[in-house]
Length: 567
Image (cartoon, helix red, strand yellow):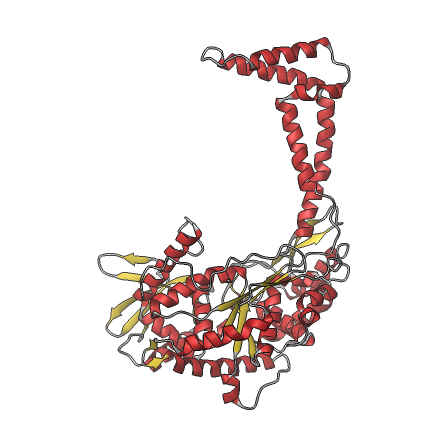
């Protein structure tokens, strides 16, 4: 199979259960974000996705794992039908879609999935949506993007680049009033006027650098979709998805908050919760092996271990889910305990405690009914990131498309699946890209500033090297140079060490007096160089939101037909 494919446009336009796993995972490839603006990483390339689809379908068919009384393949068939139906219904609520008449044929065709939080991500993240569309077209399947609205909305303030390309810097601009952290699915707009004006305010700041940023024209659609959806994250995601439709993409979208309400997904959740201890062990052992492979020492990296809280009476086992209530939407950790035969108790060990009939001796229909009633009572039980991708990869997707970070961390998901099932998980694809503002560089201020600091340091500790800069040298300076040289050549015995140090410093200070004008001249250069360095970092950032770029630059980077031709 070919290696990762990196596209370069013309310069002018710019990878047994609970046993230790110590070898590199099958999906492991050492991916790095492309360095040059306009470059894309697509692994496997568009024309090599079909072998990965075929291999993953064979792996799933051979999966020897039962979810209660169902084989995995039986659950997969039902899950794919549910996901396609609900994704089509959700997407059609705000944009036109083509929905095949033959559901059986639709379900049997490949499903390519990706996903990300509903924030204003950079163009390299957005590239995934365009690649899943191209992958799906090339195999005659369906592309579905998961809107991860179960993740937390930490802030609604963005850093906007402003100024000139030689003196640019970031300015913090509020999209909406700040609030306490909560999941995107609970976050509404708090100040409609402030939110509505964000596009204009941010565009005005951007205009000296990017006079034609797409933000100004796109933001009214965000405001419209936010009013209709009543959620900030969904408004951003739906407006972005509408723009993708205008550019020819035929993808469906589905919020994770809707995915987790599907009966097949709740059935899998019930199975995992009924085996909380095995899940806890598999999760922590996978983390330990990951840290060993990647040489990470901190127990919180890349994610914390699942805890066990025990006392003389009971033992609470942490599971990889979040829980919160509609009244208090703070994501909290989830702990499980078998309080009575046939009953699983879930708690955040603070204010929430619920008893569910989730146990292997109970029929799965009771698991699903119990989890559905949680929603009716205003409680949200949501999977953490690794479980979200586990569900997508095992139940739905023929290929899941990750960014570089997701691909790295989903090595953990691979290990968890192997430990829980004894089977190899389906492989995934990796996509990333880099797009920077198309502004000419202003020299190399980082190197110039480093040279300046080096010279200033040399002035402080070796002023004699620079005395020629003061013109004719007074006799006193000659004497100071000889005096310092004599003390440098003096062996630092216990008796003389301190005096030797004092004499050398005193000589440096006295010589420095004659060089103060030259030193001041160097210091005057530091400010402009620091400004230029800050500006170069702004211009070199690959993390700028995609809507800060001109439409032409975005389409040239994202619309893959421009470079790949038709499938």
